[in-house]
Image 1 (cartoon, rainbow, N blue to C red):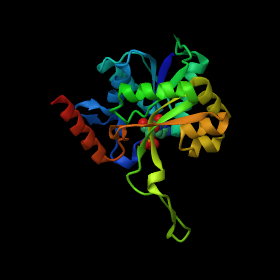
Image 2: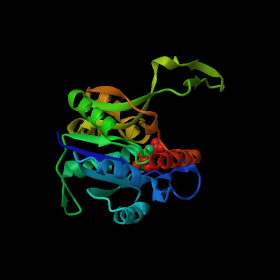
Image 3: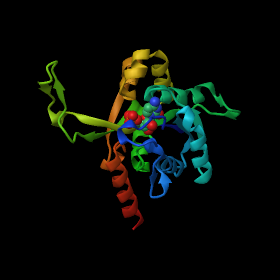
Image 4: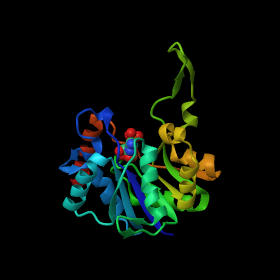
Length: 239
Ligand code: C5P
């Protein structure tokens, strides 16, 4: 099975605070995005790695690729939402040619947030195999907190039974034709407010989406304290 990857890295990182988007913050001297790229590039069965960044960060990303010797990586301009960024990344494979480079359309495409640095081969191969069988697959984790819905007056409307629900994490994988079809069919509302690629595949392609238990280290670096946590994990791995 031919596999390529799209890494959305086009966010502004508002929740982190500070001027630098989190994916470009240095963790142990290396920009966060470079860890996820390196994790992908260490896996021989992943062909092309598309990193999607906002227009103002294209040069920064190219410099990172040069400095850290990343291979098989192409930088693509992102959109104003995560879905639009991912769609731009997928288009490179559908259109087969991008800035004079010829791309093979992969059978399966991995989508993985650039801000989840500790992705490993085990979970990547699990989601890829599950996507091949079911059409779509994604990593999940048990919920840390209970999910509640508030009513218009700000009081509790209802809460979900925690044990029955899971947090949807990354990586996810899809048959390329399934996810591309879903993005082509989906509405502007989906692209601007949709929260979930698995959901788009389900909604527009009626595929199954297999949920695969992931590890805690797949969490998304979101707040400043997550950068400290990432730094500690890297130090631990080095010692
Ligand atoms: O905002 P959130 O934490 O959900 O972002 C998840 C991933 O999507 C991040 O890697 C972020 O850079 C990326 N993203 C993107 N384009 C956007 C917004 C977010 O590629 N417009």
